[in-house]
Length: 324
Image: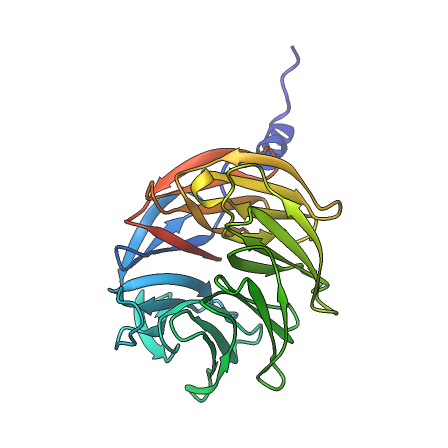
């Protein structure tokens, strides 16, 4: 056998990475009241930030300098001092600000320019709109019953709020901070994600075991994709090129991959127990799931469609966010 030249060997190694280089993955641990920080190059926890209370929705700010986390307590139908959107400075690794997120904030979205926060208030049946620069609430909009998932379109024009009891998606026009449409989907919608071009959105329905494809221009469902039997879909994310949709199937302990162009499931992969949140690296190569019952994060190579690592975190991992 003729040996490979050293330069060619290096190219082969670079073409088949086993980890995501130079990124930080932030994991909200609902039951521990903490955020785990994972070095994706080493697939290990390198820091833990304690917030207290119940932490769920989590996002990196558009400027990349901070991580925002939805905080609340464990009491139902009661607003407390713990209800807030906390801002963690990534360099200081500490909370440096708090925004009012309304009653029992669970999930939220950040406007692409970072100017506003849109939060679902499950107890109140509302969506709270916060002006970040002014640090004040500008609207509390009635939406469906028990709102949960929040997604903002890539151009920042529309916000979709899923409501798990009314089986609806409310549409907020961000220019006027008002609800302009609502449509039905299958039972217990949990999350939504827009395609990069903003033309379509995908909504998961936990009890229905389906994903609904939505025409964003018309705010109208245009198709329903059935997931494998036993799927309880929650988290959803679309690949950067818009070709695939990844769905965390909750208590089925799997992730399904949907071919977005043909609206069909092309693979289903076993992961940890009760995958909830799901996130992709910016290049779409690596997928991560927050597994709430096995207290770990699964790492999936989207090229080979295999789990390459499992990273232990704290109790009840719920959401994921990734940044350089």
